[in-house]
Image 1 (tube, one colour):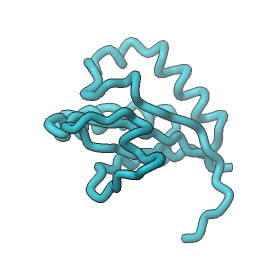
Image 2 (image 1 turned 180 degrees about the horizontal axis):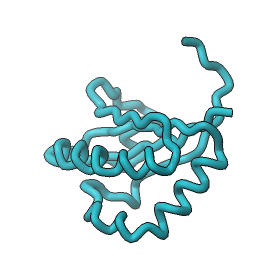
Image 3 (image 1 turned 135 degrees about the vertical axis):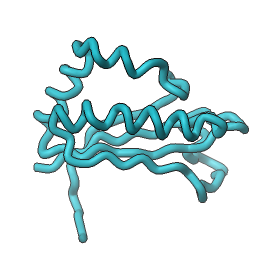
Image 4 (image 1 turned 120 degrees about the horizontal axis):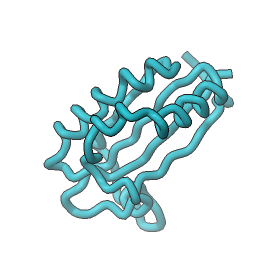
Length: 117
């Protein structure tokens, strides 16, 4: 069954191009390990809420933009194996520092329950 890794984070707005470059550098690794698709979405219409919102969830600062992304895998097993390989691949060190605060990034694994194309 198709499986998705989803991510929510706040990126310093001035680092937009650095983030794009970082994501493009990461894609060959994910693809090599079985990812079928990677989508990175820069927030352009993300409203502030009164009770909860993406800004509160990520503790975004005034100079940060919300980013929502996902990676599509053929199944959970492939995703789990890829993340294990990522942790032990010395080439990953070439990626350099992340252009955002990884401590405020949220992620999780998801199985689709409705997929209307």
